[in-house]
Structure formats: structure tokens, C-alpha cells
Amino acid sequence: MTKSITIRDVPSETANELASRAAATGRSLQEYLRGHLIDLAGRPEPEVWVARVRERKLRTGSQLDGTTILLHRDSGRR
Image (cartoon, rainbow, N blue to C red; front, side, top):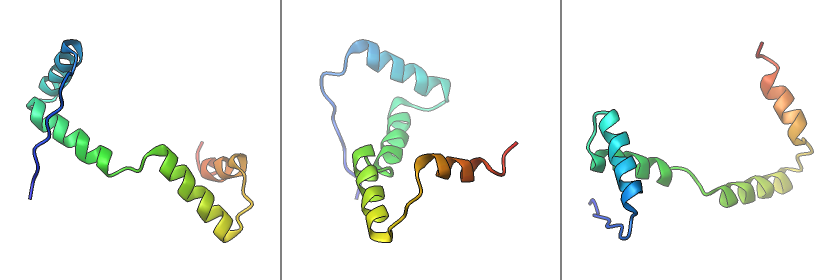
């Protein structure tokens, strides 16, 4: 079942910019915002994500630091 969401007190400049972006992609404002809301709901909040990573690191005993992780990530790149 789908739900309707009403957002009040959106500044005119913001609404106009969003409508312009929607038009630039050939979508209605409703379609444009629906897509962004679905995408937003599919990603955890940064604080929640960091907490999950920290919990997993404690649970697994991982000792990799950020620099090492980035080096591994970039090792196959030119």
C-alpha cells in the first residue's frame, strides 16, 4: 500500500529548484521526489552506518585502519 506525504513550509526557492531539476530530467516533481525518497530510504543514516561498522569491527576483531583499507581498494587502479 502506498502512502501520501505532505511537506509543509518548503521555501519557494527550494520548490522552484526541485521543479527545475525534475523538468530537466523529463519527470514531474512528484516522480522526481519519489525517486529521491526511495533512494534515501534505502540508505542508512551516516551515524547508523558508522555504528554498524564499529560494532562489526569489535565483533570480528578487525585491526585494519582506514589507510590500509584505501590502499587495498586502490591497488587495482591506475
